[in-house]
Image (cartoon, rainbow, N blue to C red; front, side):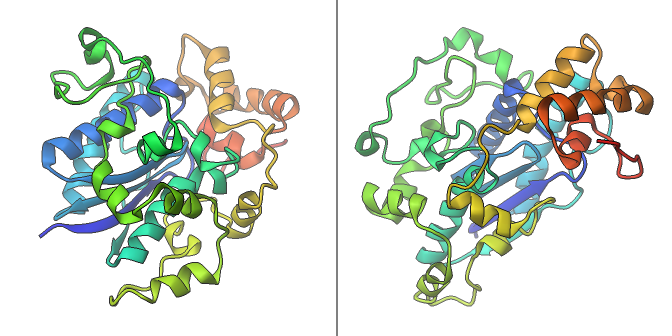
Length: 307
């Protein structure tokens, strides 16, 4: 019997997606594995060092194993890397009840805002937010990628179903990936959806969920982020109030700088000494934090940084 889950996979000391192409491949692997296995996706948000998603499945372990194996194989091949990518275990939270589900989807789609990457959930390109109430909100369709080029953006020997389209960069568009009808049915109206995207976190979220006749505890920002390393709920709440520095360098920008400098080599080919020589340059030019530099350079905790 399929149940609804919030699943989160995180990484402690390295980024999982170093460039746009990596995000594209990760999202495509997720969407195609869900379609192959017959598990409806309700929401997803891909961040540099973690992934949040909501899915209906009878085996979250089997699903995550298939999805993450496909992406890890791509990532390891591209960067000359070996071994498991991210943490061995993923965070799992069963969801039961309408208000629990609305809260879970909202927190997943609001995740980029909570991490200070964007000022509004609607502006983030690596989540499923733009699939919901497209006509009411006024989303404009982007040009589709020619199907003869689709194979470049999916695992070898995989095929793209006829009813799924990609954008010009090769990323499966979210409206073809998630169960839009189900999600829109849960929110009922575009106005309700936008309300959940913009309301401030607080006790009202938890009180609302008490209306559900379920034994599941209320979903909060704290427990939905409990599977993520470097999570600081107080900072997330400040970000929710629009107090982020949106000019700060992102992991994506920092990884781009690193990979541009070391090309044609990979960051995984560098010695510790070579990585440490990049630390001062990154901290002075981009004012990046030690934690951010560490995960973008894939430096173990035992290595001391002088920033």
